[in-house]
Length: 219
Image 1 (cartoon, helix red, strand yellow):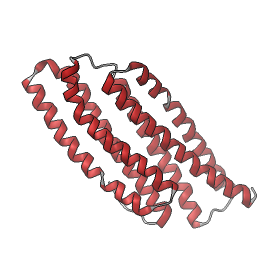
Image 2: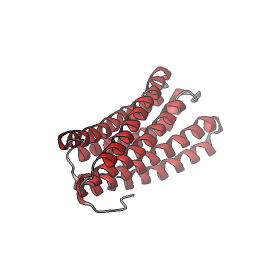
Image 3: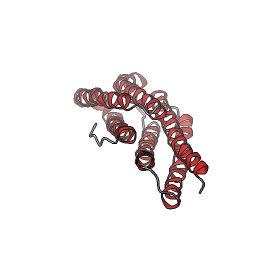
């Protein structure tokens, strides 16, 4: 492999990870919107996008294998290669969680007004996660380690909102047994979004490592 092709493949590796992030962000937005409006068509369209993420992950794995097998990457390049692989794993899991949220939109059957109250906290959590993932794309694109650290700190907001909303759901179920089925489904969604925040933190850790060589625990 020529050095020119080697550097092209490094750029392609990073591009594939960036594209995975963009599709994952679209999936998170689509999943939340499908749940908010109980839009099963949008839910199905969102779930289908998971195939794109899976294909990108395979491309990342192949690119990593080729770069390691056919070249002797320098330290900074090796960090990009290994970080890309770990980011791809986290993004694939993140997209699976977005699929789970989309699937939930097909399970909600209760009264729209009551569901609107239940979904309020979920939409707030999703908005935070979406902003975190959007900014993570910028951090990777610009190799901005400081931005990655700041993004990870937002996970505290997500965790607090998760616990507050979970308690609110339980209190509502105690007062109104008619919402128990829907609220139970939506409790899982709260957990999915909280876990999405954890995966975003992991991606931010990988960005910091790729740029600086520091191995930090940001979650």
